[in-house]
Length: 499
Ligand code: B12
Image 1 (cartoon, rainbow, N blue to C red):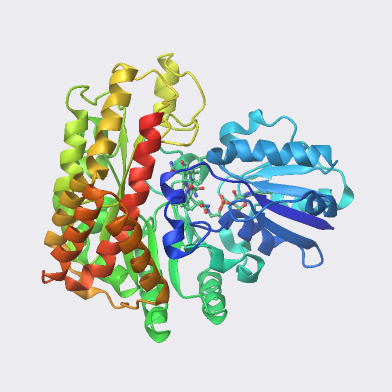
Image 2 (cartoon, rainbow, N blue to C red; image 1 turned 60 degrees about the vertical axis):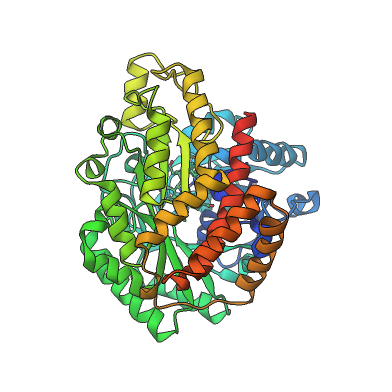
């Protein structure tokens, strides 16, 4: 049996970093974790090839080679999925579509021969494999919800070109105990966190280490500390592993703001080599936080929490949302800008709310007759798929205003200064900087520092001088990295302005 596993192209998103990958000499930000997971679960005697269309082309010869074409995708890969399907159909190859897109927008791909909804660790996956052997594919396989992850396998890193990516991805857990009104993770991954066998996760790390990879790893978890006591045990072992191996990796992942209440967990994270933590702060507006059931944020002074996290040596990044019913049309933009700048969230990804099926917000809007489309998955396309409470024009205008202000060279510099006030870079165990960092620095000097335009260049050098002449000199590389992120964010703001 011959299978090709295809990961379609992404549109430009916050997380794609398409505008700034050349600084680090990479072709894409992340490899395709779903595809890698599937590849490891295929029977040994099946021949397989992976094509990530974000870094390579798929040619007709490859499609002809295959008995089946598997596509793994999420909503923002929609256009590329359509192209791949059309080509496979033309060449007479059956297509199987899986990944999160199936549940949200599967109906848009009627040409697909077979859909697989859910996780491959479920027993339905075995059924799919056996039906493929028999050439008796069913139209739809719906995996049991929330299977245990004992069937997951360690990743074969050699099946992708690992050097093409700025970070690799390892899944450790699935699920999140919170039920935020805009997020469908409770629906797709469950509220009881499930963990891959720890030995498999360490096998992933050992294999990565053995093939010589050093650098950034994103944990593909909905919430890295969803099961707090189990996560503490795992993270402590991870800290031991990192120490024993000389801190080869730098981790990132998604966290709730509650980590700020737990100094022990913050210390373990730093010891395990975590550097950036992605928090879901969402909005500074308490009424909007209540509206989306983000109670863990309402109870806290978010700014103080962010400072505490930073003081522990971690860099908080965050997602933000505008377009809640409780957002005040006159003040939401100013409130958001002030919060981001005062709290020093340099890596701030602000998007417009989208109502996703399987969430409380979707149900509410459906009841109120305000839904107008399925979510696009791209939170920067200025297209809320529902009728917002405030006039749409006001929402879009305010949104654009936020991006212009927080990512303008001066606005971004203000946020960097707030960041530096309470960040303690001395606590990090892994301070390794390599040739890639040096090259990125030199490219940043050229493209941002010299050719970025007068204002951009001015604030670039100002921020570097600020850190050099402060007691936080060890944060120098972070500030250079922030400036590269800044160039990407300004690119996003520019495309949003045109939208
Ligand atoms: C880690 C993660 C990320 C990472 C990495 C993603 C990447 N591949 O580049 C980062 C942080 C970069 C990210 C970014 C984004 N993400 Co994201 N992300 C996740 C998260 C938390 C886990 C995904 C993951 O890697 N899991 C581990 C792998 C092993 O699991 P998997 O991909 O689901 O694959 C399994 C099954 O689905 C199945 N399967 C998958 N494909 C196929 C194919 C076949 C044929 C078969 C049989 C089975 C099968 O088998 C696999 C093993 O069980 C999910 C939430 C979730 N719980 O799924 C959101 C999620 C996938 N992300 C989402 C979104 C919207 C985005 C962004 C567009 C956000 C934004 N607005 O910028 C960006 C776009 C990414 C980009 N590169 O530009 C949505 C997708 C919504 C949708 N319905 O399509 C999700 C579901 C979150 C949500 N609830 O909104 N994301």
